[in-house]
Length: 115
Length: 113
Image 1 (spheres, chains in turn blue, brown):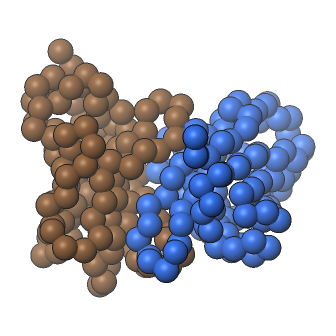
Image 2: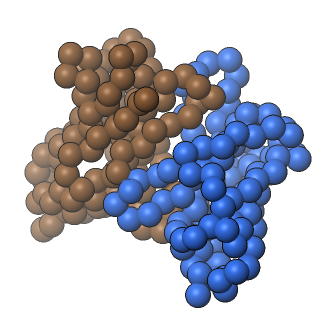
């Protein structure tokens, strides 16, 4: 089955620790995205990537880092510089294929809690 | 910059009643518009999308939405609510840059007996 997987589903971290969230897709999509979801705030874009070895900051990139070494993988690292990292993190992908309105497909999310 | 406004963070309807979830966008260029649904602790699932052409768009689970350029609106409707429709609904807009989406803050739909 084609889709997007995120792991782990739940993640606990102590303050001051970096943590990496995994996102893998087998849809052969060009673009991948990371969003943060907080109650009452909708989804906010952290980083996105349109092609391997290239990525751009979204609206709330501070305290986060990403890499795109393979087309199917787009891991997100939440660093100790992120002041309020407890949130639900969603990964998405889309096929750019020359048209601008391809829908984004979402993974099941990772809930990160900082203790 | 594109922005999306969803009026009403919580909407409650009785089972069998009309569902109306409101979405307005701000853009000088009509964007591509989407409605997504999210069940608790899950990712988002596309309900429907408007790109070009017919302004009344039909989606999954009996939902539909109408793009009204003059009102900059894209409201989501369903004639008869079902208990399984209880979820959070997000309106989103894309203006053609790397398929980036701007999301509204979401509307939680409650369906009561």
